[in-house]
Image (cartoon, rainbow, N blue to C red):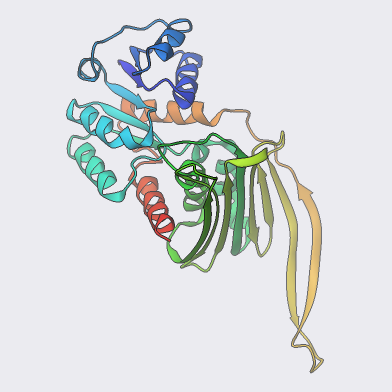
Length: 317
């Protein structure tokens, strides 16, 4: 099985390193920037081809880690060469292109997957497996903020909020009822650098997402509030999940002035021990297994379509 990597920027380097750690041979690495290729040569042995077409002729699987605006063109070309595709998020920049790629892949019986990498993380898998114990989910709040990286190809919503939206969709679905968005560009930079997103889902869950390229501190935090338990997921912490057995109880009051008596339950805090596995390693291993054993990837159209639809809805506000 011949595996190639298109794009050797920030995320392409992570993919290349992870493939090497998994002892998976890379057929070739391709990037239009020759300086990037020279850097890759210092770390990996691979063949060089003169064109994308030559690469695809000699590949069974291609990892696409290029700017989002190029995903559709490269992925479509790969599918035309009967190559399985692993695409960095976002899969495409609109639903029409996503539907088209999915239709081509499924007609050709090719595997396709978007790298919604946090779906493959141990904390998110834990949350998914234990969500029923939280009771009814009432709200999810998340913050994903850091300094940079400013991008010309996309804005902060498509760059960062895509992660939170993919996690939310995986946990509770992403059927949007109402949306409210505040977003702002930084000086004369062409794309929004900060955004606050508020969603009400049709299952009555309230969502708040704060993303920013302007924060001097890096925060990766999500709070999932249920009627029985609340989870704090902090991806920058050593212990990434904390479960609070806390909640609010409403009891009918006997006093006319108050309809309800509010009681607060402050329970114990649970900190589960999670496997120390890297999410990108899990994602790549999962995709290779799907190709080899004709399985369906977790983040195929089930994850691709609702996330891109949500991004489109949010971007139009």
